[in-house]
Length: 433
Image (cartoon, rainbow, N blue to C red; front, side, top):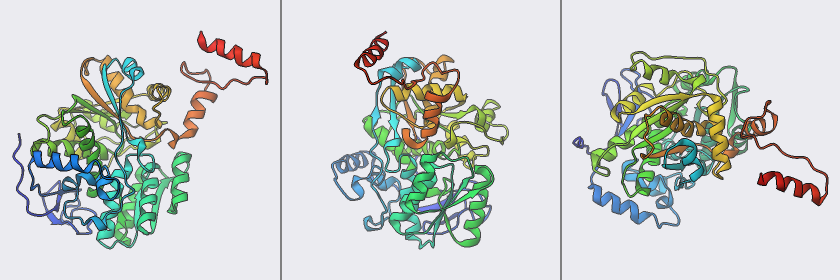
């Protein structure tokens, strides 16, 4: 086990050069080299004490303890005062088992961690509650993000709760209707940028630096602190007995980085006795990280992204270096799956009564691929993370089931009938065959 670093107060540390700045410093990046910052928090309790503390909070009905993020605040933002926390609450998402998904992937002990059960329908709420709390603590004049949809919906909701002005930069014509509707409804100023996500993020970073707006993308270290709790919560749900694998969709690589950091810390503290392997799954049309993994991470690759999975349609991931660290430290793998594989996995997930948006299904599609390739064994325990709710992208559902020609094998076409009982009986008989 790696020794726990002795820390007396939380601080932000540059991942590139090691420069440290205060926890409340507003710098969006390292002031010395421009590198990404990470949070380093003091750990003053034993693993046994932390487990007991977390378990005791699970019965809370209101306040920070009722949040599946702030329940773990000693590992997220230990200095925060409960009255300063901006929380819906969020987290407390289910860990599901469905025979249909185990059969389809070929993995007997497959569990589904469904982050689409968060308040705005995606895992982004876990990071946004922490980042928004930090923005309020530091007196930010406004908050902003670049987004393919889910981040903007979450930021808009939490900014509204905190009564902060919010600006979101989204690629014009490339955001799912459900996500854009949320952003507009929650009141954020929505800027439709003529360009892809990477162009949006570049512009958002420029605006943050020049105008003093707090940037709440996953390059923000406090976002990752919140997203770590996906791992803490699933580990607690498994009584701190780690699975063999954790599979997740990979786009901008914030979650990959957060998962690696969470596992590293949980292992260092002694909450777990071994680290699961991470399987990061990209869409084949937006797979620079997967391509680089196949080459031993010898070079950073950029692509022009093209995939139906809008939430991971990113060609130049911002959290590249720390995601590489996460894969290496967990002896993980990176793979990619086609849009056809994603849509088939989504159809299976939906038909099992679980449901998810297309990008979420990449994790399950990736598990199936890695099982076929012999990377994952049939008897290993795998947790696949679904990142977004079924209703995030209703257009993709309608297109797959009703409009695609020829009809996919799992398409569930609507059937038009006359208003006669015999017609219902006819369809019933067809359903039985």
